[in-house]
Amino acid sequence: MKIANTFLNFTKLYDFKNVKSSSLRFEQFVGNREKNVGSIANKYEKYDPRNCTFDEFCVTIKTLVKEEKLASHDILLGTLDVEKSFKRMNPSFKYYMTSTDSEGRRNWVDEFDALANRELARGNMLGYKRHMERKELAVKALELINQSPA
Image (tube, rainbow, N blue to C red):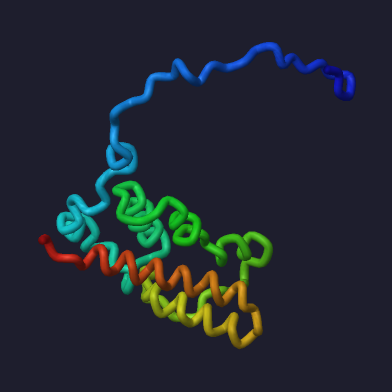
């Protein structure tokens, strides 16, 4: 068969009948998300989403995803620093609403809530939804960190 000066060869067929199936269960690939839940509180005691820098917040989210406590797409929500992106274009740009301490620490739950309310006041429902998702992610990370050993 010739398509746009390219020849396609359909003579090679794949035999899926001879593929050996494994007796592994799905849980062995995905991992057990409930194991070691209580032990993570010690690892993150300095990364509290209510009092950390954005970089520390990103490390917390990435580690929770790596340990399969959060879904892998949560990295996209948790590690997007919008202010850093805008500061490349305009160095005096201020994106975040809440104040920081001298080390750049802030309460990220309150910050994402304030950003969501700002977007809602502007009528930007997509921005409101994204910031509420980020707030829920911070709350979920906080709950995982504060869980006591079972």
